[in-house]
Length: 121
Length: 107
Image (cartoon, rainbow over all chains, first blue to last red):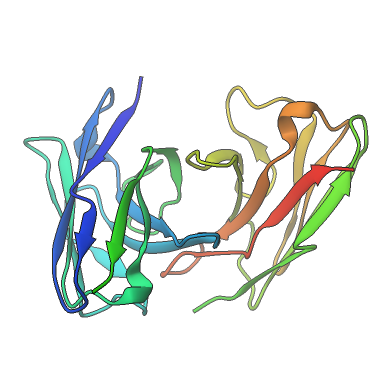
């Protein structure tokens, strides 16, 4: 059974940083792309970032480009989202998601339960 | 970025009804369109991939169709557990983008 467990959410000040982690199990992590999707309070889904299976290709939404960095550690079946220069509008539940292929453009077939990030002074 | 326009944004229906949701892409995305269901406080769930393919385990009352820029998602004979919000997502071009969602509630 695919399991995705996010951690690292919490309260941060505007301009601050947080690092989200997603620990994966139940599948061959190194052959699937992974992504982060967020949902602001009462809002719809927004794809944030994706990374290819071997980590050599990444992509970002325009809203986070230059501020967020996605990475992965295939030896530990974990991937990350480093969030810098946080803004109030980054407040959201962040979901990690497993792709159904290895390419960065792959959509997702399994999701974690989400971790809440609140950016406020 | 490809813009995804979903309609309606909400609808009210009864158990047993047939409902249809539309999703329009701002450019040709072939059949690179998925549909997700999300219930309050829960993670999204993939229902249909590549426009018309049902994910394993998803009931056959859910169907998807379309190609190019216009797509349709239908639930035949709505069940109580189907009241939720539905999202389309294109995976033709990066960044991936979602429609605004359609909330289906009980009439």
